[in-house]
Length: 136
Image 1 (cartoon, rainbow, N blue to C red):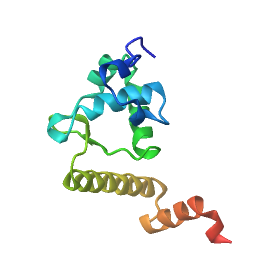
Image 2: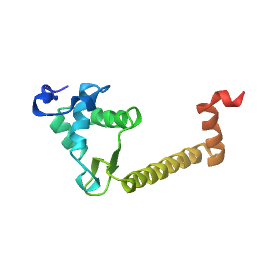
Image 3: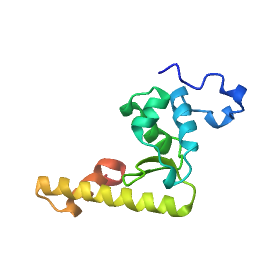
Image 4: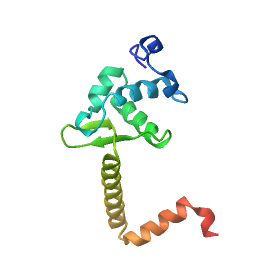
């Protein structure tokens, strides 16, 4: 991690309680994203990486952990302004949900086509993999 990490931020009034349970890198990325409220204020990964001194790939991993593990409302946009942002309302959450769901289904459909099986069969196989205890 870079020397740009948020060392001593408590002296600048930053609420460290909000970083409870987060690594230093996660805290730093979260802190940057909170400053980008709403889709119109999205920040690109390369800019986040430059500010934090964390590699692009690692920034993406951290954002994923902040969403999946810590339940933080972080959205993403591929249209200008592209990047990550802190979702501020139900509409942004719904937009991200629909976009991710559509992308996931599209990817699964392509995978099914590669195996020359129907999407329904692929979903059945995935269900067996995810919930083996239900298939006894």
